Amino acid sequence: AMLFDAYAFTQPLVSDADLAALQAGFCPRIADVMGCHCSSLRGVFGLRFVVWAPRARLVAVVGDFNGWDGRAHPMRRRCASDGGGFTGLWELFLPFGPCRE
Image (cartoon, rainbow, N blue to C red; front, side, top):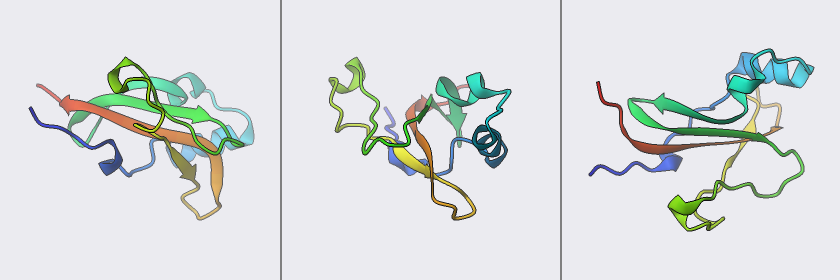
């Protein structure tokens, strides 16, 4: 079985357009942008997590799959692509395996 590292997927999970809409206070796609969603990145299937926690020092994805250990899958702070600093969003893609045709 092939294993995938969650931290090898470094691209932002929220597009710049959706980020701008969130920051403007009106994001029609908020249900598609925030939360947990099935997704694929670079041919790998997994779950995409995005949460709003601007004052948090650490946010993690926990569950039975990692023994409820908050150290196992800490989320990344999403910074603005233009160098504008931390956006208040935390992101992580948890891969399951290769996409099957």
